[in-house]
Length: 532
Image 1 (cartoon, rainbow, N blue to C red):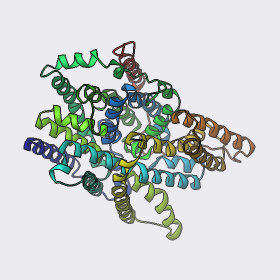
Image 2 (cartoon, helix red, strand yellow; image 1 turned 60 degrees about the vertical axis):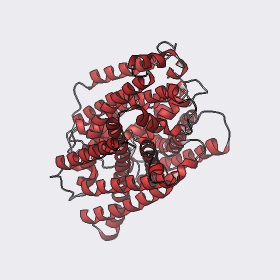
Image 3 (tube, one colour; image 1 turned 180 degrees about the vertical axis):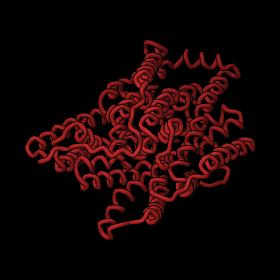
Image 4 (cartoon, rainbow, N blue to C red; image 1 turned 120 degrees about the vertical axis):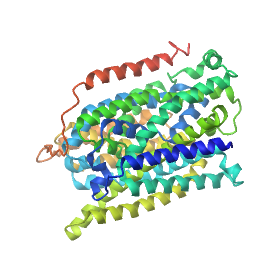
C-alpha cells in the first residue's frame, strides 16, 4: 500500500472532521432537541447533504457495483426511482410531520391511532436497526476499507479478524461523533462528504476508463460501450436481480417507506428550520441520487472488462479504487467510503437513541415519576447506544456467511420490517375512522404473511411483488375492520407546528425537471439507448 494513499486518506478524514467541528463548535447539547434534531436549525444544503450521505453507505458502493458486475444496470432502479418517492414525501408527508411537531415518525401513529401502536412500531424499528441496519453498515464499511487497504495482508491476520477490527473502528468512531455533536455535527459532516462523493464520482469512472484504455479514457469508454452491452441494460427481465416490473409494485412501496417513514432518514428532514428548507433539501438529494450511478454503478460496468474471474465479487468496488486511481485519489475515495459508512451508522445510532428515549423511556418515566430531565434522557440515550453499537459489532462479521449475498441480506430483511409499518401509516393518513385495533391486526397479519410467503412457501414470485400483494390485502383487512368497528370519534389532525410550514413556491417546476431526468436515465440505459 503506497504511503501517499495512507497520508491522503488521513488528511481527508482529519479535514472533514475538523471542518465539521469548526462549523458546529458553538452548538451545545443541552436538550433532547439539540441531540436528536440539531435544534431544528438545519438549512436546505445541510439537509440535502445529510439525506444523500445517510442513504449512500459503503453497502451501496459494494452491493450495487457487485450487482452490476454479476447482472446488469437494473440495480440502478433502486436509486433512480427513489426520486419519485422522495418528491411524494416532500409534497405530502413532510407537511404532516412538521404540522404535528413530530420528533419521530411513529409520533404520527401515536396521534392517529394510540400510544400502544406507537410503542409497537417503535419496537419494530429498533429490531430492524439491531439486526439489519447497524450490522450491515459496519460490515459493508469494513469490507470496503479492507478491500482498499488490504488490512488483513498488512497486519498478517485473517479476513474475519480484519472485518471485525474495522467494524470496531467504524462503530466506536461513529459513537464518538454522536456523543460530541448529535444530529447537527453529523449533518454538517454529511454535507462535506457529499461534496467529496461528487468529486470521487467523477474521478473514479474517468480513471477507470483511462486504465481500461491503457492511458486513453476515450478508448476505455468505447470498449465499455462496444462489448458486453447486455450489462448496460437497466430494464431488468424476470430473471434479473431487479425486474423492471417491480418498479411499479414493491419497490415503489419500499422507496416511499424508506424516504418518508424510515426514522434514520426522515430525522434529517425533521431537523429543518422550515418546511420550505426541508423541501429544497429533498430536491437537492434527488439531484444527487441521479448523479450517484457514477460511483455506485459505472465502476461495476468497467470492472466487467477488467476482472474476468474475481475471487470475491463483493470486493469489485474497492479493488477498482485501489487499481485504477493514483494513490492520492485512492485516499480520497477511501475517506469518502469510510465517511459514508460513518454517516449511515451515525444516523442509525442517533435514530435508535431517539426512538428508545422519546417513545419508550420518556413515557415510562413520566408515568412512573411524573417528570424526567433532559440530562437523564441524554444519559440513557448514550447507554442504550453503547449496547446497540456492541451488538452491531458482534453481528457484523457473520453477514459474510449469508447464502443469498450481502445486498440480498439487506433488502430481504428491510422488506420484512418496512412495509408493515408503511401499510398502517398509509391507511392512517388516508382514513379517519379506521381504529387502533385495525393497525395492530394489520401489523400481526403482515408480519405473519411475510414469514409464510417468503420463508415457508416457495411461490416463485419475486419478493417485491409479494410485498405489494400483501400490502393490498392488509390494507383491505384494515379497511374492513374500520367498516365493522369504526372509531367513535373520527381522527382530526391537530396542528402544533414548531417551525414555519409554508411550502416551497417553485417546487413543482423542480420536481418536473427531476422526473424528466429520471426517465432519461432509463432511456439511456435501455435497448433504446446504450444497450441496443
